[in-house]
Image 1 (spheres, helix red, strand yellow):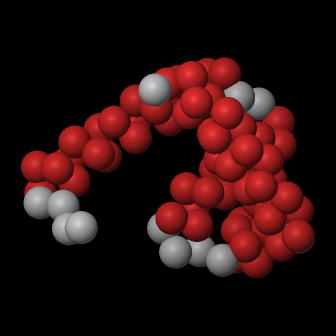
Image 2 (cartoon, one colour):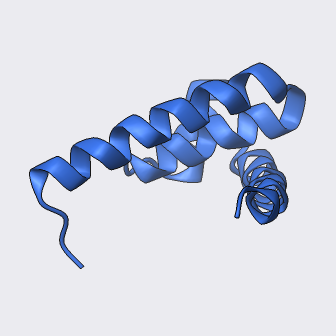
Length: 79
């Protein structure tokens, strides 16, 4: 599925709102994982993210796993 410009803009706005809510409620390892997920979406590897965040690629992978689990859980309550 390809999004047109208006749809892409709407998705970006919605993600910004979701990001603000999550940022206010999430701390620690889960917050690091969400930040890492955003960087992965921009094309960075776990190793590159680890270099930026001062951690190993394995730590980044663990953070991302925890963040995904958290996002799945809150997603269940959003529907």
